[in-house]
Image (cartoon, rainbow, N blue to C red; front, side, top):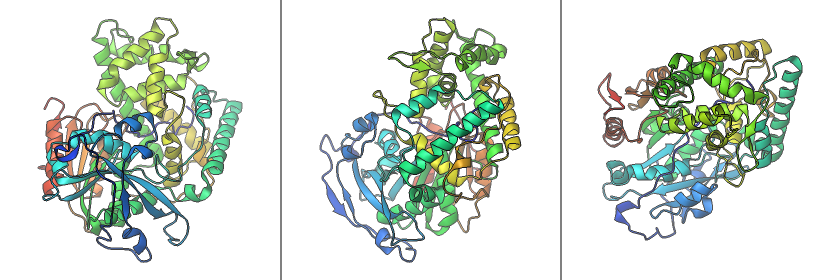
Amino acid sequence: MPRLLTVIGTLLLLATTACAPPDGGGDEPLRPHTEQRGPAGPVPPALERFYGQRLSWGPCAPYASSASDRIAFQEPGLECARMEAPVDYADPDGATLTLGVLRRPAADQQDRIGSLVVNPGGPGASGMSSAATMSAAVAGGELGERFDFVGFDPRGVGASEPAVQCLTGPERDAERLDSDADTSPSGVAETEQEERAYAAKCAERSGTELLANIGTRDVARDLDVLRSVLGDPKLTYLGFSYGTRIGSEYAEEFPGNVRALLLDGAIDPTQSAVDSLVAQGAGFQRAFDDFAVWCTRRPDCALGDDPGAAVRRFQQLTRPLVDQPVPAGRGRQLSYGDATTAAVQALYAPSLWEYLDLGLRGLRDGDGDGEMLLALADQYYQRGAGGNYANTMDAFDAVHCVDDARVLDPAVLREADRRYREAAPFLDDGNPPSGARDTCAFWPVPVTGEQEPPEVGKLPPVLVVSTTGDPATPYRAGVALAEALRGGLLTFEGTQHTAFLQGNACVDQAGTDYLVDLELPAPGARCSAGR
């Protein structure tokens, strides 16, 4: 399994939805304007000019970095700006960068509480995109009435400048076709050479200064600047998936600046990188098993009619792709890596199970049609129809490589791969476990993050939402984060990645009550998919 510690990320890809204008604003766009609301709250020494900067708000279309953004960002009621921050907070008079910021102003400005800042995860996902697509979920409700709904592209991501750049579109396409399944000594050597070359391209195209200062520690500092610039003495934050790590890092660095943190789909702060990986593999296996039960009850399921044989059947359909990719339309081919990535993408939410079954049926029927599975993999990698990619995967690697301790011992990596295959047998390609080092072993800058449970000072109540069948961030991770932050826990019984603002009335009401009134659910509170 190539790139074991980086290939399966906790990436949350939100479906595009319509956005509604604030306060019944009709079709009139918000007028461009410049405002200065900061500095608000505490200002660290030597950072006054950043904390008190003016923002020039205007149309969002120029900030679009994908075709879906170009549609979503045209919605009335949205406005965008750029915020400046130091590249290196230890050198505030040195080089600077800019972050893209998108805002949907509160419908009721007189009863406005402040800003609700959202991050969708990744690392590498665009907060501007998620805020634009999620604004429909808050429009007309109490969150939309009481909060400016704000998303930002973290440093190096999306519309922020400069952006992390490692591979071109054609290079990413070529990488996806290379299965790296050969775990022999020569195969491992070839894989590691490819990882070394990838790291070198990231350094050459992104610059080592940006790569050295792109970790979660720096994103949390940017978030505090944004809090002040938006005029909020204290931060109200909504973080999904990796966004929970940003939230817990912020709580550790700025506990006195927190008003509310809602963290959904938590990363366990107590686990090592290897243990976290294995737990995630087990989570995807449980989601696959749920998919198999659903599928085998349907007529003509690609996996047959026996859930107990579903893993073996999935392997029979996908393993031949290791040696022989199949046509997937428009001159492209479906590789083994893309087929398994398609499965992972579909397991994030039951709404995608139908497409996974349809794609697997294309393999089963022997017509060589890999188009549906390739489309799912393209969604995961955020590949546009023209062959361009969002820089999500490049940014994911860049943040991971400075956030997490590097595992360099081939024996440890081989054992980690063995444990992963055991935890997630549907993703086992049939080859012996690999001891190949991943990209981070060759990364040009050192680790800057800490893999320790957050040590927070006096902190207002925090709410963690955790889903029992979350494939990417297992339920126990949310329990551990709630304990580490001494916060409340809301359990959602379902099989999906994250739950808040995804249509469950119970979860949405509990989360809204917390964000608006700072009221935690009762201890032991649970919601389910049926209510």
